[in-house]
Length: 165
Image (cartoon, rainbow, N blue to C red; front, top):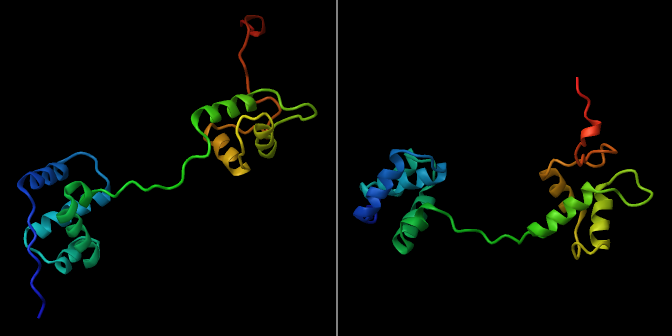
């Protein structure tokens, strides 16, 4: 015989917020599923019963219920911000590296390479230290591929070079 589900009740304002959230607008799928879980638990269904209709395990459903009871609706629906590790380059460092790459390569070089950019950024003291992968991702994010062509940064055209047809 299955045990009876623990009593779970949503506050009236939380119920309204969940129904409003589900009635329209764009939400993350996880948030919508968690909202459905909370509403079904409030209707008196057990966690294993809810897991038949929502693609979560019974344990995950119990965790959502516990987070609601301990910390409220926001914590039950949304994940905490993860700490991760900080970005190596801030916005001004990125701008300085991009500006350097848009200029002429060092003497004796025809074009920039990722290794050359990383080395020159440290040599010119733009950043204290940077790896090749960080530079590669930065250049890729700005759609820059200086190793492909000799002249890839065009400063602009003056009026003499424009031919009128």
